[in-house]
Image (cartoon, rainbow, N blue to C red; front, side, top):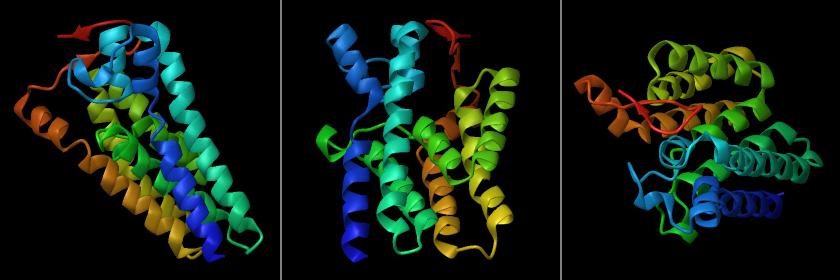
Length: 209
């Protein structure tokens, strides 16, 4: 089982290095999204600089790699009776690969898009619930960061509440993901508190002031 764990972690981490915003910006505009705007390799910065019409490809890549990592982990550990643990392990390492990609100089994104996908893979009901939190927060405020922080921060607690006693590892991963994704938004939290955070139109190009 140790070999399966190592294989899952390595493959999931390398999949995480496949950053949708970086890949699509290089293909579409022949430049690196990390040299534009906030410098973040994520969907929000990509949409601000290149518009929503090509953002679907970013979404497909970041969602697809998270699904693949979770399924690989689940399938490799299923034979040992640890399918849920495998999904959680794959999910954790694909986010680590996205946030700290060795192939991209450890300069990645914040992991929300892939994080929501991992949440859906762990428990689609909890995943949809926290995604709903994001949508409501964004619809009211137009702050992508606020919606991301609220949804990510709440996932670990809701997952633990729904699955307490069923297995400690996925619950620990849920809390780790919540902490990591909120921590990756520490700069956004500071700007929100100072009233300096920018609003974003996810369905078009440019910022809302």
